Length: 372
Image (cartoon, rainbow, N blue to C red; front, side):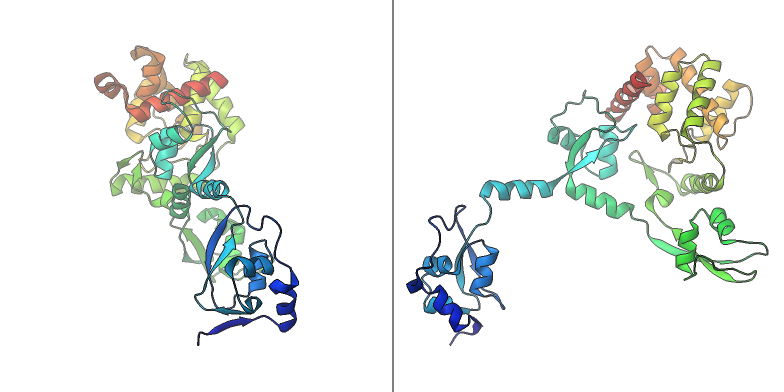
């Protein structure tokens, strides 16, 4: 004898037997029928509720005896579909795609690189051409799987380091020194908000080993441990150093560009594309600050400016980027070539033309310039 999975009470049997004439409406399955395999705990009334029908309709359609009182494990029943095949297909399609909001400075190539997907895939999903310009705030369809993978990869792996409290230390001072929040120190040490710490006590300080801090690749290129290590040192310094906000940084860019005879809109666009006017931005390639200048380019910029420029200083960093950009605009045949030179190197652009990601970079910068 087959196992009995569920037994509907006798009153329910009588109420839902075919003789009681409770069968269903004229269209018990407007979207058609599908197969359900009986599992432990299933009851006919539960299945009717789940599939928006009646017990009578299930009994009648499946030719069940005894009013469907007994269901067998593994028994195959026909139950109504609750959605149309078109709706199911739309739901599956929605699971494949998600929305991405374009940020200032984004390019299709940069978005594809960040998500680990292809530029052509994003273009096709959004009906765009390689010449299309995207704008901040625009919503793009991107692979949901790629977004989930990127988020998982970007999630910081947290560990702790042990730090001994110095005389005069406060939790706020320790948090500032190590570039973490007060709340994270309180949580890591199970401290109350009003807790007092004393010299000599050892505290656990959260340390993020996020990919940004330890990555060895940038824009598809791999960098040596020495370069990545130097970038980490500079990133750590800037994390605790005072830097101006966006509005003050913007004013510095405009002032510096005007002093050096460069169109301020172009300088603003390049700076936004590179760092969103953020001096604390340091890439794995050790491109530093607002203008994302690497040390070797900083040395060249110093010779152009006639003095040593400190790339960790916001005003000097902006000066470095501006004098480099001014030199490029004078040497390049067009403004587009000068912008490409800032990204790819002018010699490389002149020798090989613009690479695909360079063309996307130029389009984005010029679109930003038009809005500055």
